[in-house]
Length: 211
Ligand code: PRP
Image 1: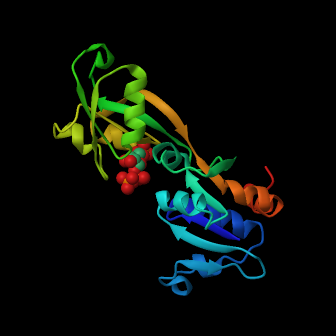
Image 2: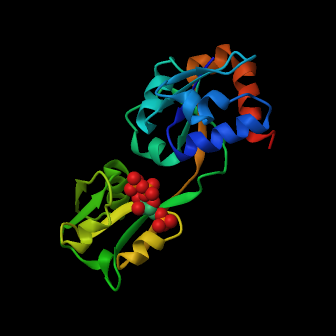
């Protein structure tokens, strides 16, 4: 069974849970052993782990290459063109939220008929939010450090992930409105879930500790 983990924080948390449940994940957690490998077999199990970028986790699961994926809700909300999977568990880790933020003191944001420029690493989430408000917004895709965009005058506001709020604060920005909650989710290929339900559920139980 192939399990796709999102590279970085999500992968580390998932490997921690796998280790707690008794699996030997040392080939992934030990830097020297890991090297530049991208696919790993977990000893004495049928599990093979692949490490991928967030949207690629969805692609592998959606195409049935991976049975299970561990990915942030932010990716699921943004990559709406990729289907073919079910969201089967909320690991309740990696908790943060999508929010719309602007320079401190920007008032009446929603009371103007002017078109707005919004910067985001998540253009689909941003577009959907402004459409739901009936506000005309031009969305500019930014790959990182999106907080710079309003400071430098590229955008009137940003849609981004907020965890502690420290990044916004350090850059003179504030949340205008929360959009939606984010946490780490487990997804499974639709057809795979029908055929390998108990094996998939068995792995999810190991990740959640049965909770
Ligand atoms: C995210 C997000 C913010 C920051 C928010 O970036 O884009 O910049 O975290 O966290 P805070 O509210 O606790 O300050 P991340 O660190 O994931 O890096 P990225 O810019 O590479 O996406």
